Image (spheres, rainbow over the protein chains, first blue to last red):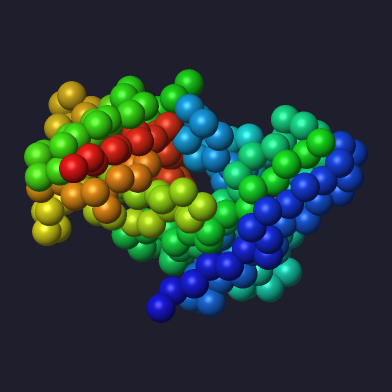
Length: 115
Length: 115
């Protein structure tokens, strides 16, 4: 059974703090993704990675960075958290290469509140 | 600039009736479309997909229709059940993604199936 896990379900941080969100997948997938979900906006891609140590900016990368040191782990970093980064953060993974079947498997999400 | 639009934020349907969720897209390079279902406090889960070479795909109670000329797809659920109550996201992929399987999501439609 495929599994994507996220380190925290709920997180409360203060403005200016550095925040780490961790994601681990056990499916040996090449691609990993970080999204945020906000009401009325759906899921928006922050960053993605198609291989270890490789990363690409998504649609809303400002204020975020990522790290992928191992294939199974993809971390999202908020260098200096701000209130407008309060959101639900979702990690996903998918097979890479030339696959045409683009299903992404999602973790349960982390609800981050920045005070 | 939303490339994938779900113009109905919510839909209410009686149990046993048909639910029709709609999705429009603007990018003619999209060649693969997916529907995801999301319950509260859980990550989205894949429901059904369709390639642009088809105009219909069925899986049990779920059918997705694609009208490429209108850049429109719809998800039909027949018969609707209370357990179908969730947020449904339409997503599109292809062309621009460079093989990285990027998905562009719509804003979601909240379906409520009542007895």
